[in-house]
View 1 (tube, rainbow, N blue to C red):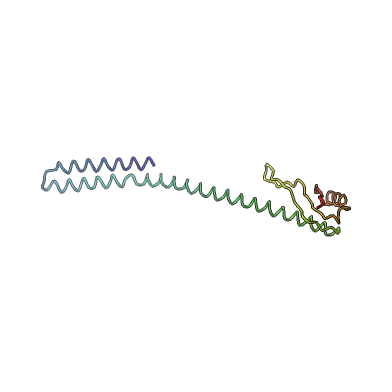
View 2: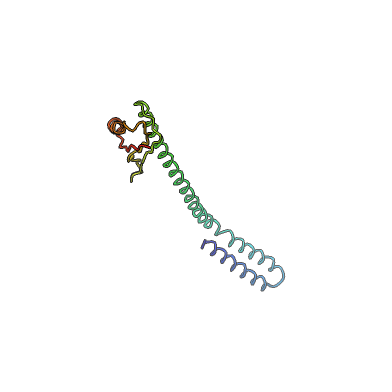
Length: 159
């Protein structure tokens, strides 16, 4: 931004100096030649800094675009991470539901408790399985079966 300020200041000074010189030029043939020289001087002072300005503006625009792209990328990574977490949770719930169905138990509700570790790994802490009063007698069997066969720590809750 400071480059634009410098450029406009130089351009303003050039125009003011050219106007003063043009005001002091005596009329005649020399007037036309000096007006052409002063016009060329003003045009050159306008054009010469443009390549430097363009490079500086491109750099600032690229940084702005890169920050937008970075935000998009982080948002997308977060979205993928959340989707993976949800999908894993649903898959584990489905595995437990099928396993329980195979041993003759139909749960009322299954909650899978998970965390995301430091290295973005999904860690399953335990699951809560809600069963009806009818299945109350098989509470210990369900817990042992899940821990032995599926290696899942569980809490069996009778509702």
